[in-house]
Amino acid sequence: METVALSAESRLVAGAVLLTIVTIQVGGWFMTRIARGQVPMTDFQKSFARAGHGHAGVLVILSLVGLLYADATGLTGLALWTARLGIPVAAVLMSAGFFAASAGRNATGPNRLIWILWIGALSLAAGVVSLGIGLLTG
Image (cartoon, rainbow, N blue to C red):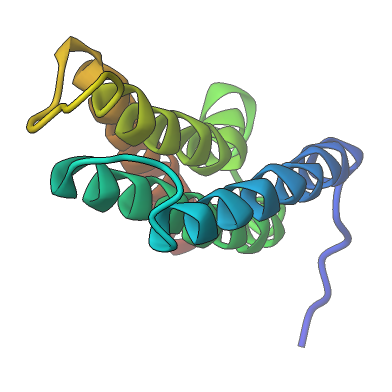
């Protein structure tokens, strides 16, 4: 079995991604306040808060795994950076999109800021497609 060392670039991205976990912890604390009824929210806002928090956690883990795989591909240049950064950028944008799109008093549907979520989804797609292609062709 071949071992691939983590590149300096991926190590830097992984360190930054790990530091974002503190914000996810704060989000978890905020979710406990929502669950106890201490933060007034509509059912729509509660569901988007859960989705934003859940996407952050899952995509951060996927980001760290993806960095290990990115360095095992034969990708270079823009394709390699897309494989490295697509998923972590998606973690930030998709979570932010859920929270921003549900902001406001008594919101019952997404506002105009929903576009942030969709840009994050595109980033996720670009990251996993480039990583998958890199692994299949490398």
